Image (cartoon, rainbow, N blue to C red; front, side, top):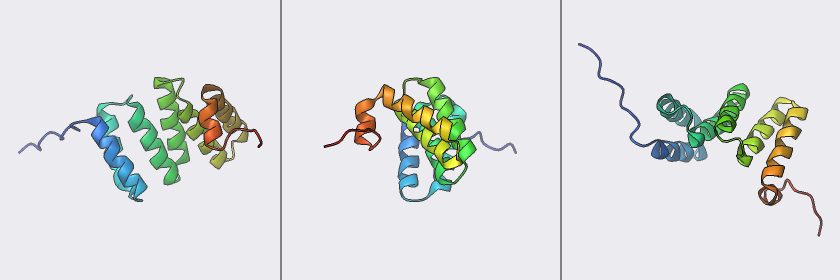
Length: 124
């Protein structure tokens, strides 16, 4: 007998939301399985790429995280949070010049966002 076909993800948004909940609860491996399946059907989904990049970074797969954040930025080149996350991952890898370039790009795209995240200068 032939095995049944894989069950498609009914809604990639639901899969990403479920994966984010799993990541937040510490179940990173389970989140990665969901995100891998979601991206198999929708390889350019921005939310799924960012979530998987985050999960990979948390599981210390830094090269995989950079690949996912880079793929997300290929989909949406003006996504400031993608540059911030990739920059943070580069920093964790010791790639300081790449980290600074990405964090600067994030600040250029969304200066208020970066200031609120503690990345902006300014005194009081």
